[in-house]
Length: 100
Image (cartoon, rainbow, N blue to C red; front, side, top):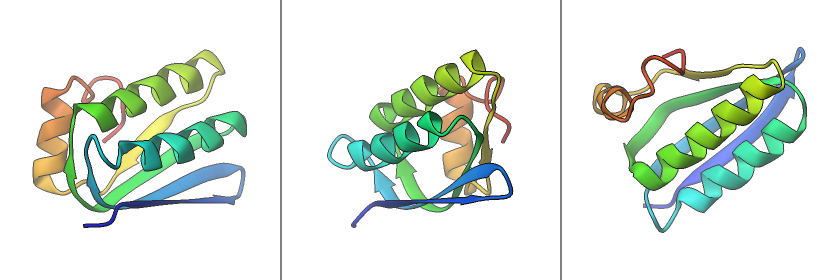
């Protein structure tokens, strides 16, 4: 399955809509868009409603983005994860540092 991540900016917030499966082969797609969003100096909302799988490679990108955003006084918020994705994020240690 193809993985995509689309960045949109509106009302002083960056929003990324991710679609597909993010693993070793596709995590760079998400990482690239997260990097672009972090460079904007805005809080970032990541919509995972259409993500079917996320592995540790992609979660490292989330951790990097969270750290960079928090250092700049901004937040990373994950919204609409499917139950298995929410569980993977929880197991990965993101339940406490990312608003799900």
